[in-house]
Image (cartoon, rainbow, N blue to C red; front, side):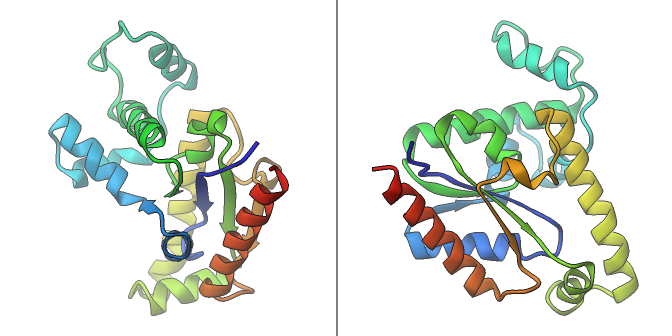
Length: 206
């Protein structure tokens, strides 16, 4: 089965967003990351900043989310926490994009789980703590002490959001097609490796 959609999960400070953009540019396809949040905000009439705070908070119940998504008759207003609503609305938007675009790059937002039935080419980008702190300081403009705290805090939020919504473990590399240590390679080389692996995999399936 060809895997036309590329999904990327990434540790904070690993350069996943930058690498994802490079991959999309090299393939000539659309890139989605924060745009999904903005589309969700437009749909529910809230500011993106408001949803962003809820987006990676732990939902209260994976089973409740499954029940809601499986029952269209239920309303999103049924006392569902905002973090759960965000995930369900983003999932709907992501599937809608997959219905209209044959190929694109999606960073974060449990993409490999949401699009599992579409045969997505799933990537996990990680790096050493030292390299990620350095990137946060040099590229994101953080103080080193704050960068160290941000890496731990944001990774934990992403892990919890993923684990609760998917029932899988975010850091388990067995669930991804390709895992890359970006602290050992340049962003450009990481993107080139992803593109080559993506093309070679799909060629082998024909």
